Image (cartoon, rainbow, N blue to C red):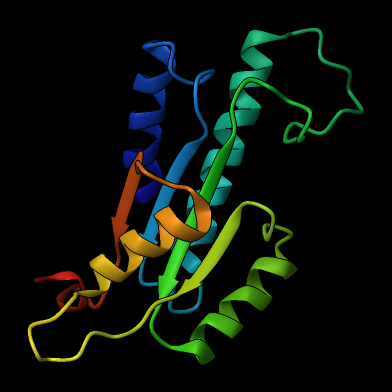
Length: 150
């Protein structure tokens, strides 16, 4: 279901001519073991491969479909977790899947119950200040939704 929803947004972006303009930014709220972030990365990589093949039928056979030299479409996934132990497990999975270059794990502080900043506030600050991200193209609110409410 995640892949189908993401692909519909990607198809619309390409049809609107937006694929060549900016890096496609995904945020996965709730890393846990990293499964959702991996699904996002694999879906984006497959979309990139299909898009490249459709736009350039004369691509050399030995060139990988997902290559950093490909200018047509770039993406980055930021995935958040409040548990450093779970985030470490997910990072290992990303490395095993060879996706660590497109998935950036972010440890966020679990908000206190005192009515202060939410995890969403912490994430927005981290994305902007540490990664230069001011917009999100795809947001997946996976679990622990209460952490992101104000």
